[in-house]
Length: 239
Image (cartoon, one colour):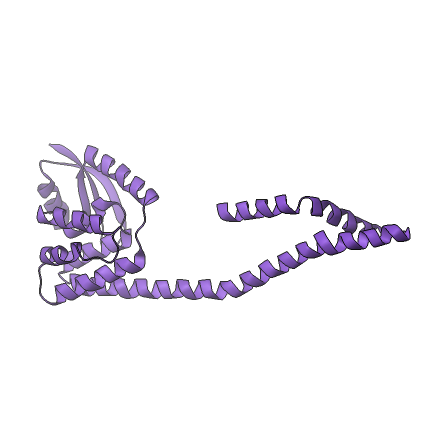
């Protein structure tokens, strides 16, 4: 008997992960599938831990271009709708992708599928594809409507990208205004106020405390304006 790390969803859609014992992976899969559970993944206990670590490293270090990934999925769905087998579709697309960074991962998926791995498991092993995409592929495999499920995923991601772009565009104008206002305030404090300070000094006039404080701040800021600009730029870059 061997131990496996099993990830599955119950009838309410809640995802569970547990260690189960079985003679083979297939036996464990049939046992839980017979109870009405949707199996996400089954990995040998040690292998699953190693794979999980590799996936986490990949997700932290690498990201895919979502727009180009959607182009790949649109082409993939078109081939599936045309009646081509999944492996043949991957063969045709693996060497014709618009994103060269995505090519080795799709080629690896194709090789995994050629060896008998399920498509969703092959994508999951790469460690860079979104979990919602892997789950969508898995749902399409289970329901026998992979093309329809992928089309829904593409529609959802297109909507999300459109909303994101609109939000960024709507934030651009007020961001520019804030930058201009800050730049104007810096100019007034570091250039205009010190100029008036020299005038007031030559007149030997007694200034209110607030005015004197503003002049002191402007005079001090003028000496450190370059250092402050570098600090702000560095902080913005880090953020």
